[in-house]
Length: 164
Image 1: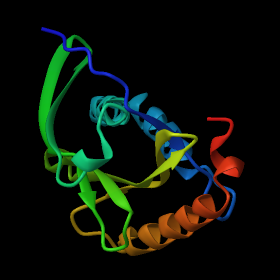
Image 2: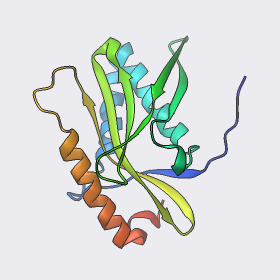
Image 3: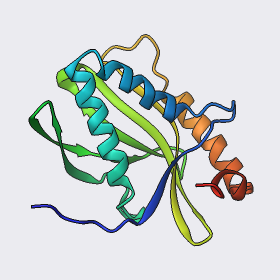
Image 4: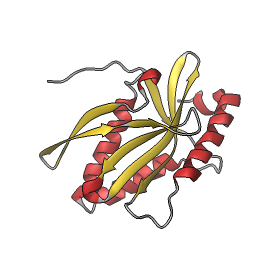
């Protein structure tokens, strides 16, 4: 059974304060990984499915939102339940969370909600993969950078969202 959900928000990738559209680069990196192994393809498909799903979620539904997503890869259907969003210590920053413990991989993407011309936008700024025992955990750096971009967008939204 297929359920049609109404699009509530625009999901966009925003350049960080260094001019890098890092979430788009992360997606490109996942595409490269997907060319070489099935695990990479599965992670890519779930990441894209999660971004697509996000546009159907209201701002008041973000915190600890649990859902089951499904994808098809190489003729096999996969279904996983995720606690997809988490509010972070710097409000209004959130994290999209895709956990793949079976692959030793946890995808994170930081974003913030904002309104522009009466429309809700989820502005994704940073994305990265965590591992079980990282040499360096970029989470705090990514949160701080996402918050800096949030402040820039808040002060001049048309510079970032008018072409979305």
